[in-house]
Image (tube, rainbow, N blue to C red):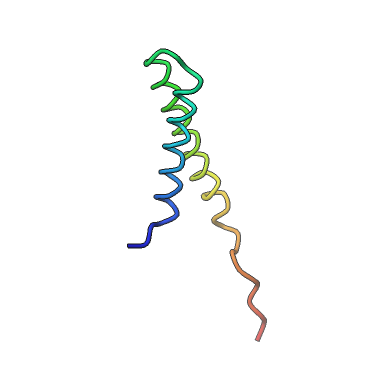
Length: 65
């Protein structure tokens, strides 16, 4: 089963958010809050960037006939 890039991006964001939340905060409540903020920031930022890039063409221009 091929993995989609969106699933891999979300998994990466989840793991990085978990790592930094545990690394930077001591209290459980602060860890959870930072984890959610980082996860929403990374996934939301990637989706926002994808939405902003959507109108631009992704390939070479088509030749005129």
